[in-house]
Each structure stands twice: as structure tokens, then as C-alpha cells.
Image 1: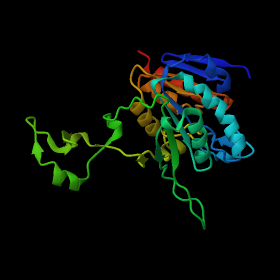
Image 2: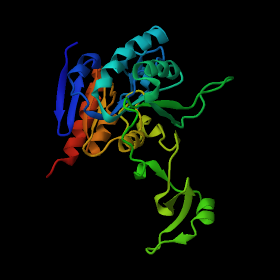
Image 3: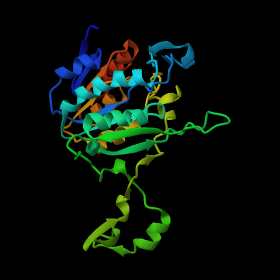
Image 4: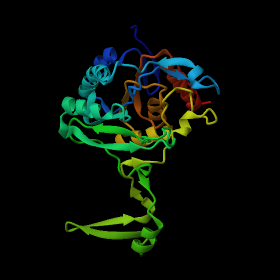
Length: 297
């Protein structure tokens, strides 16, 4: 496959197979790598044109690997080439659903070592149940690995905070400091900690407030019509959680480009890669529009 690229003020977008492109990227360079691979759904996926149905749209990519073994054979060498690209505080976030996530975790444990596994995020798209007569899985899972065992984590970022419950505020935040801010103090293992009501609490690992509909309805501006497009709020939380202003972010299967568009908007450097013509075109146009919007008059 012929590789081409487009340069933007904050990074590069590559058209080609990441298996061939990853070895040419700088080593120990990326604080965050987000991978949203095909989900091994067993069928091709199409992109919506305008307000039409995706089933009648342009073919975007195939998602049939001949079963889970074929899927893992595709994924493993690509993941292996990501390992040397992560910085000392770099983390890999792999986004999957129930069809492949458990087998993929076994693969990642083998590639990175079990000690590199730091946890997972359960994302609830909010689309509701679709199956009848059996359990419907209504969440997706994002596995998080850090080869060094330590990752960059901005736990105090507002994107990772949520308001305290009204009952908690009433019961526990009775004290106020000299500036009038309500707080509570707790002693844990002999050390005193102060928590302010207005900073909220750190969110947990189940994210229900990033609805997929933001990215998957033609009635909302951020949608591109690309199948499996993720909402910007979800990617913004990940980027803000695991990278800084001077960080570089990599998405080796970037699809419609949500991750790199968000990274660019947040001032991060980025590299996006995709081998699908439809995906590359959408991501290129999205980044170009973002760059024009920020250009000085």
C-alpha cells in the first residue's frame, strides 16, 4: 500500500497501514496512544452520506477477520510496534466491545506484561438495548496499559471531576476556609486530607455521560457519518486525562479522526493513521476545517 501524509500545524495524518508506518515514528515520544480497532463484528461497515442510512452508504472498512484468531493475528504485530513509541509515562488505551475485549486483554498481558495493566474504563454509549429474548450488552470497554507501570494522569482536571451528591454536600462540607470555600477534612493512615466542595470528586471507571448520539446523528454538528465514530466528549476526557499541553498523542487506527481533532483542539501534537480511503478523507477534512477555524484573520 502506498503511504501518503498531510501535515497540519500540530501534527501529521498518514494514509496507510500503521504496521508499516509505526516503525518510522520517533521512539519514546507519545504520552498517549489511543487505539479504536475494528470490533470483529463480522461484517463490513458503511459511512452515512448526508442524512441517509449507513447500510446504503459508502463502504468504509471491513470488519471480518475469519473469527477471533484472525482478529488477534491482525492486532498483535501492530500493538507490538506501539510499545517502543510510548514515553516513560505513556499509556495505551485500547477501545473494544464484548466481542473481542477479553481475548485482547490476554494478548496485551502477554505483550506488555500483566504489571503494565492499570485498569479499564467502562463506557456506556446510552443507545439502549437492541437484543430481544437475551442479555443485551450495552457498554464498551477501554483497556489501559502503561509499560513502565506509571502513567501520566491529570486526576484534578475538571474533565475528570463530577459534583458531590447533594446529601454528601449537606452532611460533610460544613467547614469553610478564609475565602469562603466549603470543605471537609479526612484523616487517612495518619495523614490529613482536605477536599473542597467546588472541585467535585474524581469520576470512577464507569462513564455514562458521553452519549454516542452526539457523534452518530446527522442532526448534530460533530457527526461525520463515519460508522463507530466516538463522541468528542469521550476523547476529550481521555486526552485531558493522559496527556499535557506539550504531549504527543498517537492514534494508529484513527477512523474519522475524533482523537486527533480533539488533540489538536486541546493544543497537543498528534499523529493519526488510517488505511481506509473514506476514513482518511473524513479525518483530513475535519482537521483542515479545524485549522481554518483557528487561522488568524
